[in-house]
Image (cartoon, rainbow, N blue to C red):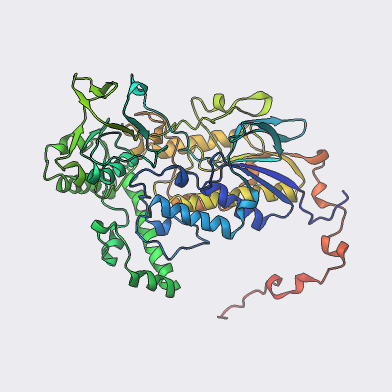
Length: 553
């Protein structure tokens, strides 16, 4: 081989999506890998993914902002404990600018197809320019999907929905010019978006009809212990005072300790998810009391709101102000199923017709993990077919028959607590895989089918002992009541960090460039020798490992 042993083979990485995962990937690949070309295609007109697309009234993170940020780029200036979508989007814009991610990104470019070319060991990618509608081809040695599980919003399947003559909106495609002052509004859905929309739209609306398909637990605020210590107030959206912000800015160690306290508190949620533990059993009366107290002005709502299933079976949502909004005389909570939509309102299955000026669908996304475009692996295998019944993966990021393909936040790849830790660790793992391909002359890398099957069995066995397998309709189970848990990591956040800290290289199959398994040895020389820059680095202090003597400090 005509290259030194420490030569890094040049590789091209095509990344789909410039949300948080795409940005972190851009930063880490650039930081840690030489000889890598990165191209990110983003369908939207701006970066940010979820936090660019979701701009509905009240949109915010229901995880404390101080754990919903990059570990390497702490923000001491979050104005609220639960940051708004706008503030989160601005934070990631600043991160992207600081690390020059824009050099790798093409906005308004949507990937519409990807096919594995076995002969060239490359992914052939079809891309559509959304402004000109032009479709062109690109190729890469690695294909990395960073689209996330909640990026394809859907209208609800309700007869007559597009016959409505008033204003029809979806929470994930909000018309910011819409003015709901003194209008009657129907809000369909009580997932996290609906829970935020109701209190946000209530003050200016004339009336809200809130249609709820199923019962859901409204949790006390996540991070409530820290909130109490800081004396934050729900009435002002848990905003920080100028003195508190100044303290964070001038005391980095105190700020680090504050972040660690929140992390520990958030990670404690995991105990609630394990069946028959004291924490899980105590959560039911605790959450019931919380909801009953906040619904005290309309106690009859408790029976239609409080679920029979265990807390955390569906995604736990704190929803500050939501329950208080439901007891307002301007809010009508309707649990009767919707039958159809007319030109001027909604008819429930009991025959009641309610006229409204606008309908807001907070009805969620396609959560099946099906790719949004044709993605063909070996022998033309469509990923949509492979994952149709069982989206099985290896460690949530890879699957057999799809070489050199990685995904962040894929099946079994999200967490109950803070997601940012997992995103960073997944990107670290993927970076290590690409580095190995560069270092060891690897042309093709694929997880073994047996490793994929083993991880699937491990996940299923883990979830048997958790509340997620109890009967409730949840996107964790692809929108079903009792299906396989396909969204969550099978374990705690620290468990995921440990599992992804060091790849198990024996779980992969490899093909080498030119069929040469020893190609990584190069030509018998190192790069420094060939450039005349060799300086016996192995004698530098950081490379000399001095054994510690017994009794030494």
